[in-house]
Image (cartoon, rainbow, N blue to C red; front, side):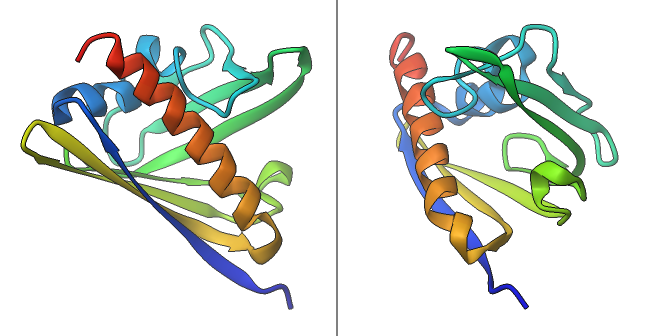
Length: 149
């Protein structure tokens, strides 16, 4: 039996909660930052139905090899405006035949927004690469937000 873990990351963004929330739920903003460095979101692939049971979908492609693609085909499990967004993706090949739950909690303090990501279950072997990928994506989001705040 494979050892399973949960990835938990927290990040502070120098922007109000409404702006950070929008970056996670507005397709035209998601396409500007989602995914680690070297990956982009295919234009027109983002679908977010803002309700429990709604679709949360997009396709990432490697910048230097657009044939290398990673789909997200999740279902929204929590949609609490500007507070919590959660979804379940899988089971399919890209999730190692698991249902992977991703939860994002948003808290604002003194004009800053704190996002806590919880994702799992994940095999122990992918925790480090998943952490690096999310940190890279969050750095892209940080740069995007810095253009406005």
